[in-house]
Image (cartoon, rainbow, N blue to C red; front, side, top):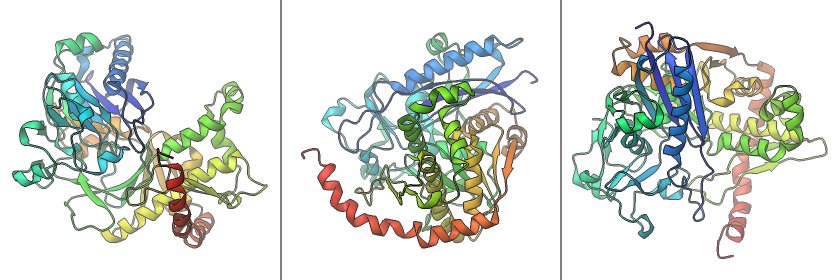
Length: 487
């Protein structure tokens, strides 16, 4: 077992990532490949062009395997299993032969706010599945999927973790049992890498492909956030706030119970920030051109440069605030992102920090009611995702929430969670708790500045929490003037 490795595959909204770990949680090698920009075929629709998720994953796998086999003493047979995690709340419409009938529909698309409905443009759809079901088919040739990635409108029974036995549950979702894939629980083998895929990617033929869950649940496992007093903030294109739970709490008012990456356990997740880290990337793309050379000369990325600049801006950004409604909720589709409070003091650094503060304040306002309803206050936050590399962002979270905030050595917790599920499937670990102890390693912890926490509390209660009711009437009048494609 000394040479045994586990592979975590994490395909998100913006990239496909492959990480290979040893059984102590050390990264042996990794690779990634960006996805192409999504296409917008109509207002509030979004699709991944062509077969982009699979195309990007193939390249990421090829690169990872090439690097792995060039490490001294490493052979592809050392990889015992692959844990597969693919972005949730997407729709894959598949032909009889396994090809996509229509490009993958993104979670951002308004069509994901209702049950699947066939459209003429979809053509000949034989199977309706998730993004993870589709990628599983590509890797293994098996029509199987994890039961724990069916978040949204599906006839899935989240008490039994299997398809509903009631015909009416299928009919109200415009489906029949023969049009969906068989399902497996997290930590169970979905299938094995086919010879054709092995030849294309360099993966070992027959490698077990293991079920995980939806991406946020896999992150929670990989972050080690199994304590009900430890909240997780997942910094992705969608920023989620969640805590681990044991019951299917269908009566909750301030959160949803979703399947965890541990069978028959749950993730309690509150509202989050749509296009959260996308907004940070958008800012860097739009305003970073002037600092690219300076940043490169100092060995920094554009985001790292802006983090340094913004760390010199005072808390509250001298009155500049950002509302994160770049992708509006379905119950207020007229909302748009707003920056307000500009005056002559403000610079691009103020704008950047204001975006970060807006994310932290929004998450505080969503996560606090969840903690109250659970009657379990958060004692600590774990921050996962690329944004956790920012010391400034970590400190803002600590000051806004008023509790210690930590990040793990491996910031991309989803890949760790994938590896844990993979290890459980092949007997590398005795239990999920033992796996977390071995694979998850805490990095830095950021303590709150109590003075700044009190300031953020006042700012939040007197201003930030009151802003949507003020802007909503104006944005509701603006939306039909600028969002109607006929205008």
